[in-house]
Length: 127
Image (cartoon, rainbow, N blue to C red; front, side):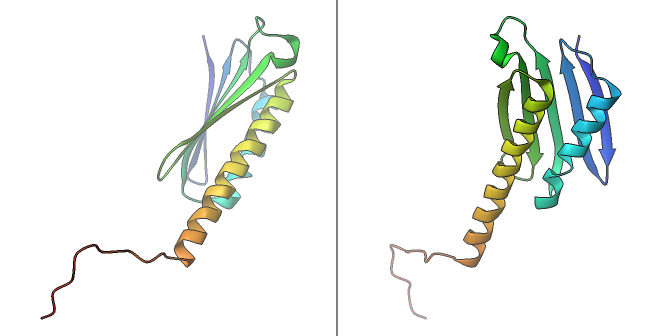
């Protein structure tokens, strides 16, 4: 059965779930501290859901899987990483989500500052 931790801070909701592993208080605190980095780049994040999973059937180098789901206004961002250590997987996940959020913010900024002309195929009638 999954071990869940639900946390709301500054209007942002963080849901941390452990699958086939027990989430210790130290691990929960480290995860919340690392996830705060995501909110620096984008304030419109509604919810961040992180699943930390231990899968003993996988090879030793990919036993710990971290899955992230960022609910934001617009399309959600979902990614997953695997490594041999739980904290390393969490670090890699936060880095990957941070890159995704920064890329999205940069593309929106470029789109906002460089509008492209729109071609209208029909002639506009003059009044």
